[in-house]
Image (cartoon, rainbow, N blue to C red; front, top):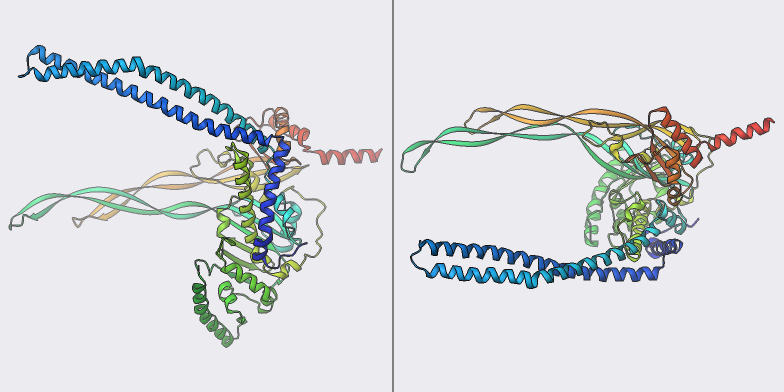
Length: 631
């Protein structure tokens, strides 16, 4: 296993380029597998872009002719009215001079007739010609665009969710990313390290990516959370009251003053948001706990950092002196720059802290924290919490990262060259985000030198997937599928009650959301007349709702291309289970499908899963084996 001794330098000097090149090569291999003629495709793209410009020019000319025709029609109508008006005035002799009406009549005839002649003899003919040319160009554009998109779709048919993970693990041997979070890794984290399940009904796991560093497991987790906060509502009322005012000459009179008064009430209301973090397990320094928050964030120049370190060193020395006086354990290191920038002053074990943060680890960490260049675009954007053997990294860049790797994110391209450019950029960003999540951890050489002790796994588990992964697959389906019909908010989805059969988990899904009930609260507000007035303030009361559904999550033991090939077979066998809107999702080799409540549909679905994806294959093989041995 390749060690990474200096994370920042090795990222820029080696791994950044390796992953970039590998992503480009991988894309080229997909194009080759798709059997798309790349040179012909590029020619089609070139012709399409030229044809599109020609169409836009022809369409503009056609639009100009249409606009000119409308203008001439308006002129003909307007000056026809002018002609009629002048004629009526002249006939009725209601004008003192005949010059005005005659000018109106003559001008009206000239412009009206001229406009009509232009429309009939020139504009209509040109408009038809330009419209025909635009239609011809449009047909050509549509045909070329279809050819380009068909080529792109042939390549996209080979895309899968795990491509970035595959590229990273093949080119960065230290970081081994999994295709999905399996039960063995969950067993290891849960029973050996005490990593808890997310049982909070106000939090649902929407994504989890697992991996290892020298056998030590880590998870990148994104949760969708809700919390009951407070929202302020306003109501208004217009009041009127008499006011005595002076005219400036000592005389007073009464006027009616109008005032809009505002009343407010603050009521509970749910808020929703995502939280992304990385958790890494390692037996090194098992008693140590500490936390650090961003300190160097916003420090852009060496002078700013130097000034910060100088000021914080004073606080560091005071803390060390106070700790010594009180007989506490804290002892400052000699590296003030590391101490002040990393700022893990609440550590509980100086010996184990120094065991982790050797001079090389300190040097690596300081480099990460000080670097805000393109070499490390994130700089100090992370929180680091160590709780004994579990290490948590919360970074700002993770909240912006598209963690899902969905193949359908690439729909809408017509050029494979443009698609390749954006695909490589996406893989680069994905790798960069994960690498710099792990960088504070791989900055510590001991973490790479400490291999986990052998762990005895169970022979079998009651589920194929951990609860986190169950929820992640459930959340790959539209949220509205699980919401209560009266819900007015998003739902937090919780997985429970798992029963396993073969390579399928049947999972109970509880969706927690809220309905809203309009209410009015009357508040008293002081007006400009010195009196208290009633103001009606409308607000929403949030009433909790719960809706229960059931899904099957099946390991299809294949990829997206395999599933696409079996889609019709499964749909026919299941009685059209995939025909229902938003009734299923497929991602990372797993089919998640909403289960009906009637027994016939349940049987059809079970039989379809069995026949197409080996739903009960393991049990069948075991039963047949036992039967043969009995003979």
